Length: 343
Image (cartoon, rainbow, N blue to C red):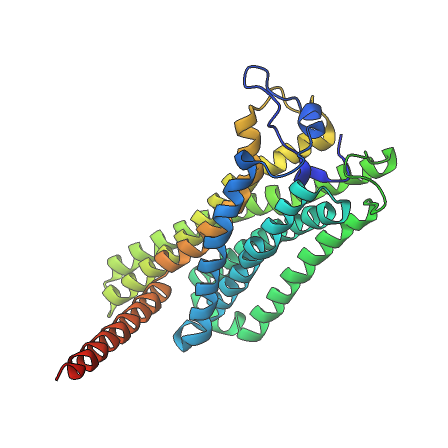
């Protein structure tokens, strides 16, 4: 059974490890006030999420070399991840502590927004790499800045629609613990099932097929280059390997999304469909981990493309060098000024 507060208000602090919570018990055990066991982790992770994603956005804004169509998608994803740290986590904590219906509804809605936005951005980046490698000669004419910005706008619009559709069954006048009516429960089951299929199952299958094609194409191109020994084959091979490395970063991001968000969606389906949906029960620690693991992806994503993409890595290194040179010059200037005072 699902309540007005949704998954945002659920806590497993009163369920013993020897007798794990069922779906119904897990839902009814509502947190009142701050709980260090379940609330400390999101507070700790929100700060680095905000810092790292702000760093990514600032790099793209300041470095002209980073303003490519692929990095526009990454910047949009960084903005979405930034919203997780700056808005979604604070809303979630506020819901757990204050237990006000409007805040809990906003937390649940924004959770749906960020999850939809994340998977659609990863799907867009996968498509970009697929066209770049499989249809290399047509990439520049197909993937233009205008089209990429258009698709980014579509991603945000779809995410906003998926978020707002939940207002169909939420009643702001009801309490957090009040259950939905049978009619609204049917709507929740239908929408959650569609969202799980459309934004988890289907994208994972499509992207798994896409990365399989990318791997095959990279292998085929490398073999043909070596076989025909064409002029500049070493440079072409190096470029092909580079594109594969970038595609690998996005493939890891897909795996991170599945690991971080998959358990939460399964838990949500179990809560919506009933405690008999799964044959196994989850320990209190597993339940808390499922709830908070999804926020980890917003921290891992920017770290992956800062460390994994050569252009971001180079831009970050240049920024650090400039900052170090500035600090050294400031230290020298202060040392000289101090020395002059003793003359």
